[in-house]
Image 1 (cartoon, rainbow, N blue to C red):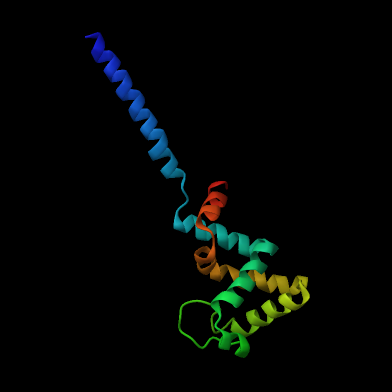
Image 2: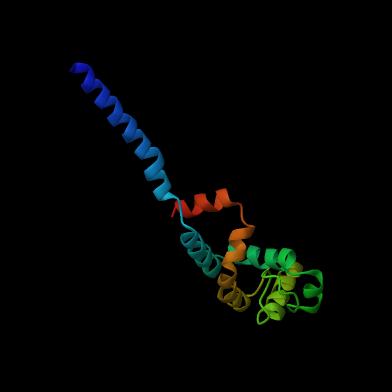
Length: 136
């Protein structure tokens, strides 16, 4: 009879350890929705995030001909939208030339960049981004 109690205690602690490792840790992992929401918030309020995203989307997701023409001509699902292409490309080029943008220009960057949060998430190191979102 005493052996049964020890077995139940071991089972209890095994299940408790499993619960801590699997259930609690997995419930703390950010969802895709939380991650995109966090990135949108950062793009709307953090100058470094917004400028880095602006430049990366311009340099990595706009094709060479789109960069030259400052338009969107390829339906590839990445880069700036047709509405934003000319202005966002101009802002990216000015930032690359001068190393900064005016406060008024940054206001526009903060306004337009959150719509590109999905691209930013795809371009980011997923482990680092997950850790940032989980820390919030």
